Length: 165
Image (cartoon, rainbow, N blue to C red; front, side, top):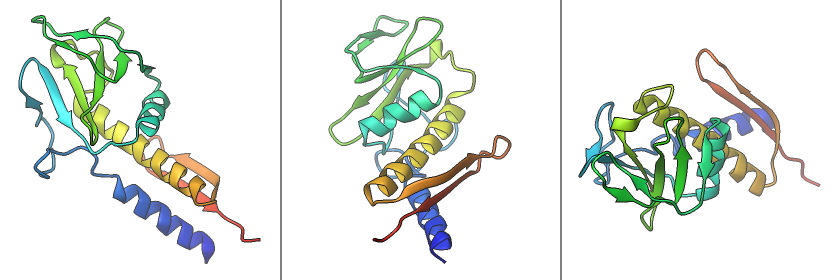
């Protein structure tokens, strides 16, 4: 009974964070919808926790840095993100905190990831959701007994337990 409750709780935590990427006027962002005021594209997110965001990016095997560094776009525009992801082509992408949440910023001319931007953000959203569940569960006294990611479907299964003394 308690395990079933914990699985349901895990699912609810995952759903809570599953809509992390959407436009600022609360319309959900669909594929190929990117806000662009310059050659840097900015995607507004609901990602709020810096530590969870950094852990999620590292879980995706990305080179992540928190140092202050300017990113230059292909027409000389400059931004200074809070979190930088080093790409193999030397052109970096990053996240900037706007006071409420993090915005993903990239010059898509220099996109050098193995997957398209939309897939990258979907995978990051999933990792962020999983890490949010694990942190929240740990803070509530739960232990992670089992964590499995199905490589074909991407389904995540988490089993948590807590013992009352």
